[in-house]
Length: 152
Image (tube, rainbow, N blue to C red):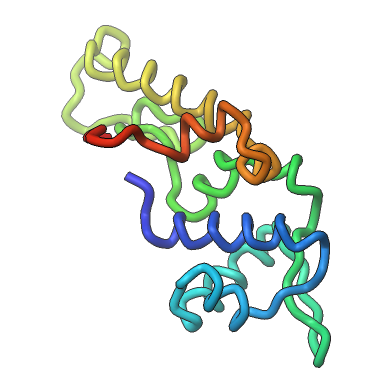
């Protein structure tokens, strides 16, 4: 499940992507996206360290995307804020860790299924950019808008 931190990071980045390169202050982003300002400040610092946003100080300062919205993927942001996409550590590509209770990793049916799930999720998140979501592309709509009554 996507954490609140991940949701807020994506909402803030989408806000910046819609701002046409104009710097936006944390207070304005927080108010517009209904994110607690203090929490957003910590998230923006993390995004700045990861070079997803640039910041400028001063009266006309604020945050803007460090690179174009079509070069920032949902997968990149979620891995930064939430860690691995895989539901099991042994199914992760970027954060692999062997499961302590697994006797035969190569024959493990659970690992095989969860690796397939991770691959499908990663494919969608790694090809969906902020620009796609802003433009409302079919791929982003499918990912961002769960159908009514969908338990996912």
